[in-house]
Length: 210
Image 1 (cartoon, rainbow, N blue to C red):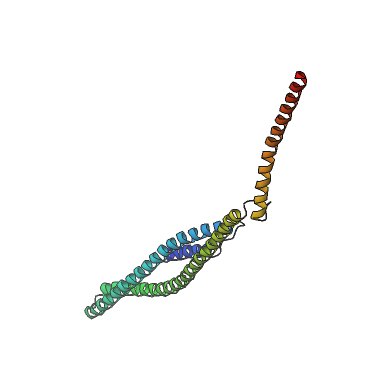
Image 2 (cartoon, helix red, strand yellow):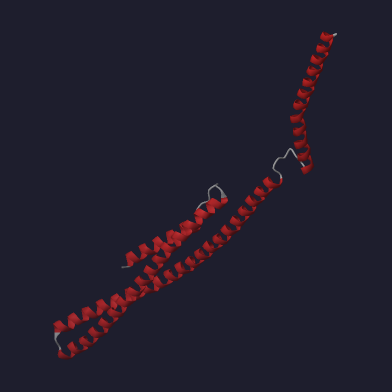
């Protein structure tokens, strides 16, 4: 029982240390924090179950100690009766039983004291870990808020300034007007050419008539 108890204690301790001392990697801060927060939540739940189990083991130790103490009391009464009868075999057996149960009570009492201290220590560290997980959640929300603000500002900037080559709406208007002028110029020039051609033809006909 003691060996199993210590093994479980060290397992919980390693889980707690692993969570609270997890190395940071150079990645996107928000993505890293999101993943770290999910891992922390998962490990918090797992460690919570281990602590519950450790508490139940401590209760089992206490139950075993109570049972051993009751048996020790019973054997002491029986030893007194055996001594009254003078039965050497019963006296020897009762004495051995009393010593065995009293020794068990002593060992279990020591284990319970150690288990109580260890469990309290782990519970304090577990509470500290939960506070750190909560702090991570707050930090996560803060980073998410900043990320949303940055994205919103970028979208608004693209809307307000669709083209950096135009510093004002007047510049954009002038550019559009110039485009219209360039579009109409070839049409106007073509019309003038047609009129000149027509004039030239009319003049040629007049000369032929003369």
